[in-house]
Length: 279
Image 1 (cartoon, rainbow, N blue to C red):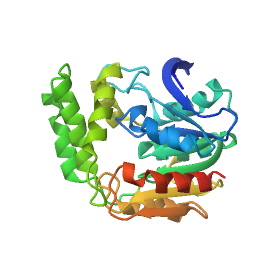
Image 2: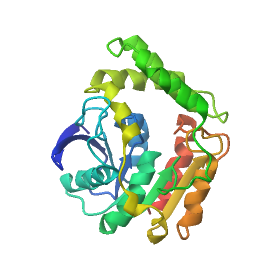
Image 3: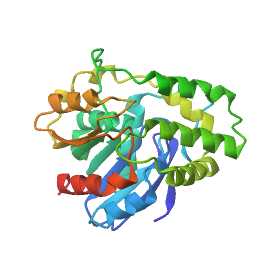
Image 4: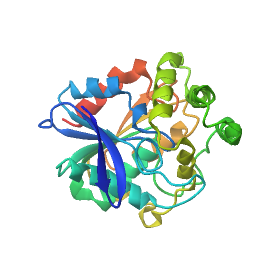
């Protein structure tokens, strides 16, 4: 287990693996504005201990992967999807089980359509359909208001940045469990220390492309699992239900009272579901 810098599609992507490379591979794709560290290393080790070769990686503009000047738009969702597949190629893996959180779940959907020969199964956590669905409920205004204050943060001050990151995750916590502040601070401190340029994460808000994949989710034939909390403030629960209604035979794991999160107290239930789904 060690971080590797991979040269993929003309950019550098930082990745890390856990477990035996001979086990069935699982590719973890994190959501917008968050690096791979939010796939907690302990979570990855627990999943690997169940007989899976687990890979996590930093998307562009987060962590140790290639970053661009904050406020710019240099790539598309297709590029990010191709990065995910490129990570597999760099590890010498032909096919893998894709597990995506939030935006990562949408990238997993595009991958299943764009690179069907590379995706064995898809698990989408706290995600939504990659389509224009104006009837689905929007992100909670409190989340937008919180991040609107980002311009006031001194990004060179570790305490200010860490407090801001933790506050953002606290806002996404549901009533199912008490917010795990200790874990959040640990991960936020790691995020601060390893990120090439933290403000670049906001470039994900300008992400575009992929229009040709709108409403093509019905074409996905691989087994799909949807895991969604009923108190998700970013992509409310109906977004998860929309995925289930679009993908034939998709399975649903509802986490009552969970927010837009992968809470430590839910790890065992989530890992059990993923292991069963990828068996």
